[in-house]
Length: 410
Image (cartoon, rainbow, N blue to C red; front, top):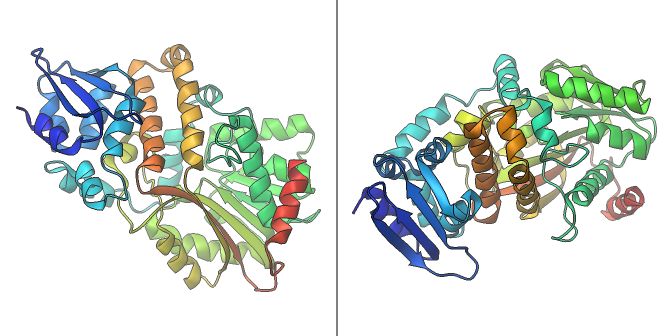
């Protein structure tokens, strides 16, 4: 019996997982579960089981990417869902053992230490790694507005387009906007949020990004809409922006800041925000105590990436003297979002392979499947945190949010 055989046999109790080894031997672990699809995995390389046992997350990812581990019944989303369902965040000890493996902790800790400090130069390199690989890829799996962040599902079966529109309304409502205000969009992506805020509330927006691909398309969109005088986009680091701004919004960017730069981020936002200003920060976060980013994500997907614990955000923002005025935790919305992204990526397999290659397609679907499972079973959620500089800056109840959200949605 191999190391991975013993490891999975001890871990997998829910769901049925069949392993087919390179020599043709088969072993089934676990028990049928109506909530989990049965999965069959074939190892085409006799060495890969030991590699996975030594470092499960990286070993399985690279084995799948290289074709040394094939999913013959079900797909990679089903496999990761089955394994992670047996190591949920709520089952603390099991969840920790799942990611460690034999000797994995040391390797992961070293990789994490090398990716902690995101200065301006490194931030630009990290962003280019993920976002400057070509806009065409994102056309294939995102919604029409290219919202590459957690959608807001009023109903679990809502369309991705509807849920992303509802996300923009939800965030805009929390900003308490007035016509003519100046808004800074930190990490503006392809410009969708900035254009939305101007259209719905008549504000002037400066969107900033470190991605040349995003900048080019965002400017084209503003020009095509005839709003370039009111919605501008610049290739600039948030640390180099000149204020003040009445409002600051940041969606899906804080994950790239890194703990070592949290204080710098919040101090900069405090400086940029007008005295009566409001800031809304939308970010992936961690439930519970802080844990390092997994090595697969750091190496292949988001170098320098880190999802903050709420305690880390609060500590840094309190030191900067920003006042936390509202906190909302979205627990399953991102899982619904990524499920749709995954389905669209799988449907576009031939186009993705033609753009890159088979290994890239496998890497991308592994990334999406793993991210989705983190929101269903892991310690990951989404935070929306509202900040103000003065306690009188906003109404004393949340009624204004509901009223504005209904208005924007109409």
